[in-house]
Image (cartoon, rainbow, N blue to C red; front, top):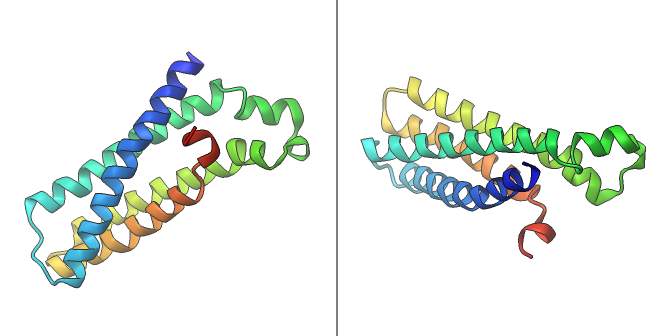
Amino acid sequence: MYQTIQILHSYWAYLVLLILVLATFNALFKFFGNKEFHAKDFRISLFALIVTHIQLLLGLILYFVSPFGFKNISANGMGGLDSFSRLLAVEHPFVGILAVVCITIGYSKHKKKLTSKPKFKMLAIFYTIGLLSVLSRIPWSNWLN
């Protein structure tokens, strides 16, 4: 089960990054370009929300079945983790949760706005924070090999 969830979490991350970059840049370009908000923009932001939530669920499952997550903290304590183990057991999950929270807040706030500019502003701010957070805590050495 661990390997299956790990593979799903790893490959789903490519889709998450692709869609999140698309949604973020869509919001930024249309905000600064003073464009109108259309159904396509709504779908892009919604799809980004959905794929990030699925990634979060996969990550939470992985956190509890992986030897590098909760089991590593239980076995070694926080003081017994080296920097890479701390990244996998603490920083990556924590920042991932914060990123999904930011994306969710941005999506929720944009729905309450009535005109295009404020809608794109909410999406641009919160999706950018979410994207940068995700990028900051990807275990690149594992991911690119």
